[in-house]
Length: 571
Image 1: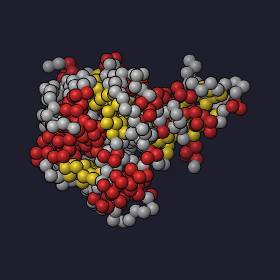
Image 2: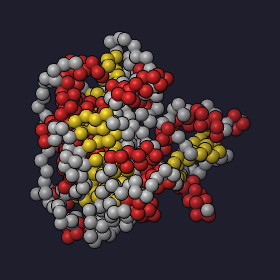
Image 3: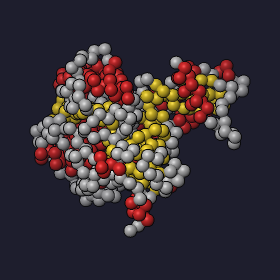
Image 4: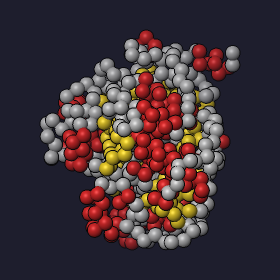
């Protein structure tokens, strides 16, 4: 027996005596290539609707056949094993088709957020080594990527058009009135239109997949350090995690379930728990490209949505939407809340609107593909706990200063995850990988404890991170942008409570001596908007003559955090 096995045996598994009767913690799962999801479901549910986009539907057979054709088109361009293909798009049908097509072609997917600034996009393209990028001919997206051709590893941009996937009436309207949102695409070797990739018989060359080694996805995250790193998620990681989620019972009837995806597919939460799980179960993914509470309610009402994955900010928006009717949310059988802690009062209020005991929290990281813990079907999850470990998943609490020291039930320490869904490691970051994965356990950077029934409670975060509507924002990115301003002497950023998004960045700035009159909140905000992403923009910038520092002269945040909490308590 290895030292690691002996060490793990010392860790109790209190959840075993409290595990739900419909599943078994000890079960093991067989990994498989992710592209098999669409092929298998096209056999089981050939005529069922896979994707619905504003009324334009794609059956499982259509999605499968289109992914075959796009795969062959990509292979003609040079996509194959070891080639990285970026996807830089909102929720549109081409995203799902390309996801499976890239994998069939043998490539690896790299997700890019439309929220990223130009410098962030350039950094990720260079780090990931993307050779191809898929984007939309939209004025907010295409120009950012066009500037990276010739400057980075990018060889070609594959351009998608929205009118290709709209129903006839909306297509006509978009052509008539959507011109201002579209870019003129150069006719050169650096560009190819997505629709040309479909012009073939779909007989692509299949590659043998090593499910434990071959990477499906480079999903960029700051981990616990704040520096963006690509989490290498394998076929085994993602295929097992979707089986774990299904074993946990997500209440989606095979071949019939209606799922609303307003959460972005470029985020691991929606990619894994909406696209992968829904495809495996033959469900209908109703896509919305952006969050609009009024539109969401209309879609939920029209399609009688049964499965609704959200973040707490979406719950808030739906609760406060003036057009909401009492019956609008009654079709929902299960609502999964993730990405950020769910406040008790918010969960209880949303539960009343659904009219069923149907809200469950999930917990995990990008590095755990992402789901590791969840509330079981029986009982509400609005009790302060995020639930029990999923099947074949260990939750281990370790000493915050010594990650090799395992703590007992009830003791507070760093939450660690061990299971088949834990990533292969970070792309080109062996040192960061060894810091993040210790003795086979993924360090989350979150502080919590297990109770005597195996329920996980999260009480704090060790990592310097702000959760804005479930999206990780790292203060260092904003701080470095502020430091580059010639009139800024010092800057630090903390997270402050926000009723809508949970948290928002707040910046504290000291001006260069003599230049105080040159700085204002308005001009610094204007300066930042082209450097950081929209989700990273500070809610407020406060000017100080000096900032708190540690005894060795480093900027200290704890005093500022304490001040903000005191202000909040006085309200």
